[in-house]
Amino acid sequence: MVSMKAEEKGRTMGDPLAEARYVNLATFRRDGTRVGTPVWAAEVGGVYYVFSAGDAGKVKRLRHTNRAEVAACDARGGLLGEWHSARAELIEGPGEVQVALDALRAKYGWQMRLTDALAKVTGRYVKRAYIRVSFSTDELGAC
Image (cartoon, rainbow, N blue to C red; front, side):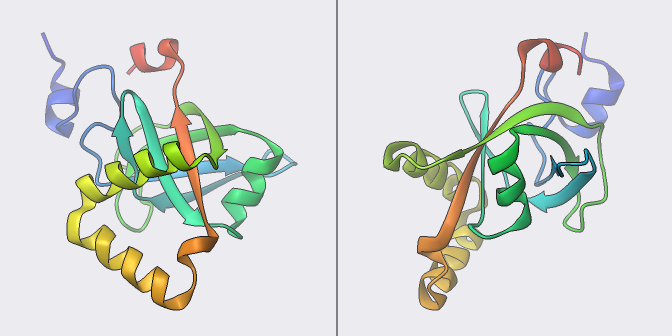
């Protein structure tokens, strides 16, 4: 039986972000301070993909440590669910970047396409960083 909490949130059991429109991706400073940022995230095979400006703080922090936490949130980063430990890694291989782009475009449709077009016009498209977010099996089972 699915718990009421999971049912009310519109999530499937075992996946804390299944229906989340926005995800708060928290990365950590060297002193251990959590820094959260609302982002778009799209899932492929149990892994979530996120994109960001290549010079953003979260990208710099991920170059230091892949420790991360994620939670469903609203567009402003207000939490809609619990934090979940995760591993976030920068990806650069063109094959996996394309998987990320395809997933984000499938989930966010015209909004992602518009974001891509504006980024191309401003020269930011080629400066993007792509991030793979994964969970341990134990963490997902605890949801």
